[in-house]
Each structure stands twice: as C-alpha cells, then as structure tokens.
Image (cartoon, rainbow, N blue to C red; front, side):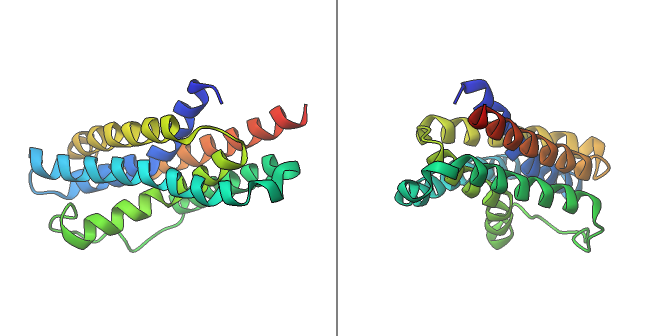
Length: 186
C-alpha cells in the first residue's frame, strides 16, 4: 500500500480523536501542557497499538480469506465509516460537562473508544498483506498530532465542528474501502 494511502487512512482514523479532542479542549477550564500531552500521547499510543493487534489477529486467519479479503477490508471500513457518520448525526447525551477527561479512567476509555476503528484497520492491513509497523507508526503519529491540534482549536471552536469532523472521517474511511475493492477487482 502506498504511503499516501496509509496517511489518508491515518487521517480518517484520527478524525475520531480530533473530534473528541475538540470537545475535551472546549471543556477544560484551562489548556496547559499536561492535559494536552496526556490526551495526545494516549490517543497516539492506542492508535498505534490497535492496528498491530488487529494485524496479528488477521495474519492468523489470512490463508482462509485470501480470495475475498478485499471485500472484508471494504466491509470493515464501510461499517466503521458508517458508524462514524451515524454518530456524527445522532444526538447524544455525552455532552455533559466533565472536569478533566484527560485523567484516570476517562483517559483510558476515551483512548480505547477512539482507537477501536484502528483495530479493524489492522485486520484489513493483515488481509491485504501490508507491513504493519510503518503503517501503525504513521497512524499513531497522525493521531497524536491531530489530538494536539484538536485540543488547541477546541478552546476556540468549541463543540461546533466536532461532529462534522467525525462525519468527514467516516466518508474518508468508506472512500478508502471503495478504492480497495476497485484496485482488487480491476
């Protein structure tokens, strides 16, 4: 897979982290280095780890799915993208004010929630026979940077654009899935 495609996938995956970090940034009383570092580091770390875990699981079953792996990759990316689009449109009760979601269990829960999609991408990477380490590093770094940017902008933008970014991330993932099917069926 071309590095630009991996970068686009990383950007699509980072939209969840970006949207959440905007909301977190807008909820913090003040934005100092510590909460910025905690959230950025953890989101980047989890986004790095999840594709590796997904790749490991996917590489164990690759021989069973070789003939239709591109359809599985498309299906996973489509489901993830559709879920992101749905969540960006649906009203939620998650908009309660939090003191500091960059601490303790809130940090872990947000890190896992924003990186679950990367697990499925790791599975897709394994099914397509792509080397996982460089892709995971790119995904982790992009998530880290997008989280930091989102927190800084969150102070100014508030939650207004958070759901829109999640919608765009979903569209990107679906587009990548369609691209994979087109490449493998042509």
